[in-house]
Length: 119
Image 1 (cartoon, rainbow, N blue to C red):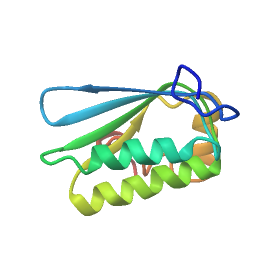
Image 2 (tube, rainbow, N blue to C red):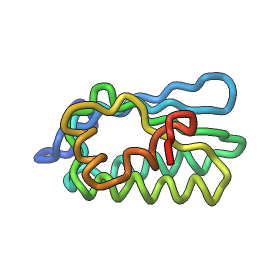
Image 3 (cartoon, one colour):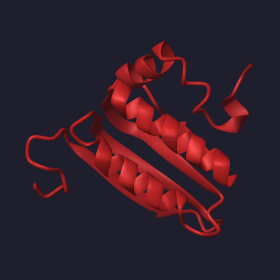
Image 4 (tube, rainbow, N blue to C red):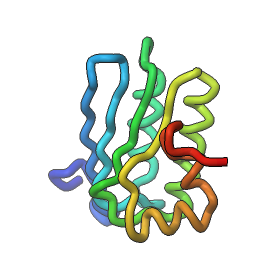
């Protein structure tokens, strides 16, 4: 394991959590999400969504450089879990290749904050 908590041979992934004081969590995601590290993302997001009194989880992708389809699958599973629990779940600041992958797969609008969703 390296100093960032990543397994040797896995893509770099940094996760930084902050709370807003209103039972909402912002998780800043940096680096890359792919099959080599998606279990870590799944574990962290699932644990956050299991917290009592949580009203929302916002994933900030400003520093995310890459995501593959397996990573998108984890995001969609997390969105479904959040929906079942009545918890808000959205992505912000996706850009470049990450935004392109989300758009090609047709999930960019589904994972957008509610005020940014369009029919």
